[in-house]
Length: 227
Ligand SMILES: [Fe+2]
Ligand SMILES: [Fe+2]
Image (cartoon, rainbow, N blue to C red):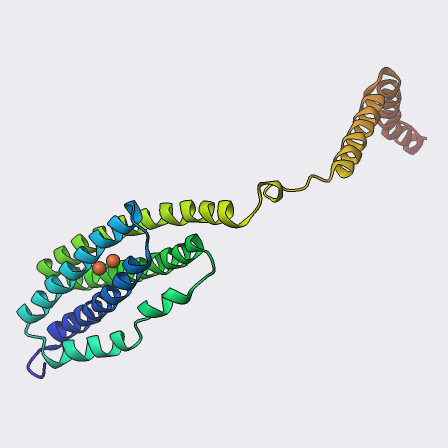
């Protein structure tokens, strides 16, 4: 990378970070797939694993086209795979649904990190007039966004499953403090009565009298001044 100018070096640096992240997520996704029961969620994870591998390949190709690669790429992977947490996820939570929920939350977080990474690459490339890198980053970002929105739905349905698995039906409804409600209602009623009373004909009369008294006062003062 010694021969690269500042522009290309910066593009290669950002792309290498993205590459390292993709490789790290490959490991995490494989671990999650192994722990996930068959069904649409597992299928979507498998599909995204394929996408993740393709992202790594495409990013690597672009890095090489820009004149990077070799040691830079290897160190990016080395740093990130060292902290890959995939296998640790196997011990999370008690219930099956809860484990899957925790994994889905981690995946959701990871997708958003990728979205941020590719948004930065896209913006950097646009500012440096590298339309090819910008196009690649945009296309990958859209796939990460689709995965993130699938995961948002998955988090909701898995949370529902945790409730069904762990919480008895009788404890799912909030206990309603009936007495408090009754008190509130009677307080509202008496407040309404007071208002009606104030607005009744007698109150109107009193109000009118008060107004007249107020109007008369300045006239009396004027007369007093004249005298
Ligand atoms: Fe990706
Ligand atoms: Fe992803």
